[in-house]
Length: 115
Length: 112
Image (cartoon, rainbow over all chains, first blue to last red; front, side, top):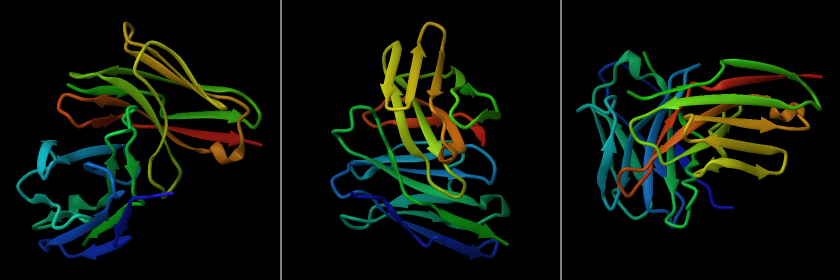
């Protein structure tokens, strides 16, 4: 069964450093998303991406964040200058055109630890 | 603003039935989804209600009342593997894509 993959599974970085989180969505999906989940809290929407552009972003997704689909398979989230409060689990998700129920398929997540 | 309310924790006995309620207040609404998340895992889709009424998928059922901004997830014949967090989530489809607004989650504890 096709699945969303994410790398790395765990990233440790120092405050102020740039990080890139990588995702490979399901191959025939057209809609891509990033969410984050601070430990013990709810899953929060960051950004949605369709047709090679951001379609919506949340208040969390400020100028320090960017997304890119550099080729036909990868979808990346970049945090330019990490802060301690960026420590969280980051989930990538994708959705196909045929998913009429709106089901989003989540990757296993990248745990980002900012020290 | 956007808010979804659900109980933070629920405890039930193996083999029993449990209902997890969710009320929502969101600026956009297209449907209500439920996701399951085991500790350390990713959310996985359980069910979706776009219209009022009950949707059944095996041991799980989900209900929606749009007029009451209310829904619930019903889990029957509980198994130990059902111990997880359950999130109600509003599907907010105002563009061509979908944004999911998640509730804070209900931690389900199952006793043997």
